[in-house]
Image (cartoon, rainbow, N blue to C red; front, side, top):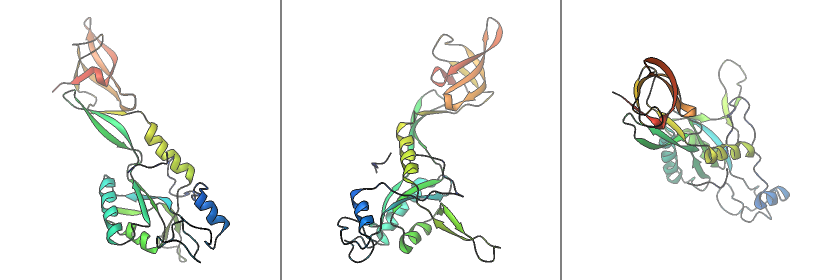
Length: 242
């Protein structure tokens, strides 16, 4: 599912921003005409043209999910939205990702997708009791990201009130996913034995002493002229030895 938005920022669980989506023509008309008399094309809570009711606008919300269950939650929620009859209010479900490369032990490369925010799914939806229940009751969903409403006694945790993401947050999230350079992941650790397969040290063997995944590089001790010498190498220049 592609999104016209482009975005990321750290999601602040304690102080989430309230989303004020861009002033599209429909939303500007809704603001100027809260009764909905000029709201043609604005989605209402029932997915119909609003009459006397104030039109409701779909917003982006962050939903925390169980570790490594982002894709499962997305697929399940898409199906449940149809089954529960709220697919006209749960409009988009996104897992912002950026391309990556995994370097296998045999030196081959595998294309992968790196999640921008592991443990979170973004949902563009019209927030009401039905859509909140559809999201919260989906297996592996923990809760919306939002503001906790403290109970009167102060002894127990309160209810989480979902807060929409700000437009700037949404833009940064999708922009980061679109622009981030591919990340290389390698199945290497300190102490592993490697063989240099390219570059000036080709055919040298050595031991890994440091791995820098973000830079796609590592340092290894190579025996050069009878001395152990630390050399920095690209992941693409080595293969792991068994």
